[in-house]
Image 1 (cartoon, rainbow, N blue to C red):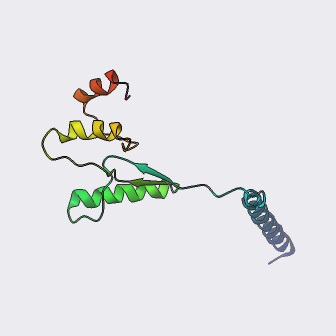
Image 2 (cartoon, helix red, strand yellow; image 1 turned 90 degrees about the horizontal axis):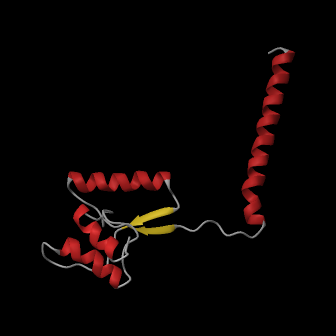
Image 3 (tube, rainbow, N blue to C red; image 1 turned 180 degrees about the horizontal axis):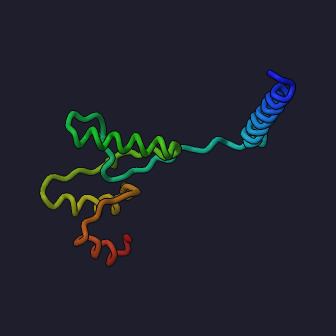
Length: 124
């Protein structure tokens, strides 16, 4: 290499080193002040798979949750638990019972016909 090429390489290395130092300094300032690292938020949401699945829909649901977690690492989606009722009307009754029992998920699934009930009762 010629002298000008060597100087450009040295300047590039110096800039890269300074940039890395500045980034490390900025990253450590929160810890130096005694700030806690951000907490992971558990988001109870309808439709989050409860575990492993052996069918295509279940596996695709798991992949969607994994992709969400890659983009939002501080949010951990978890399936809602706490109440299960048998029968065809359970989909309409269970969310209301969960709200009444203070165990409702943060994200609910509502059909269009049930939204009026939730609005009249000031749940939405």
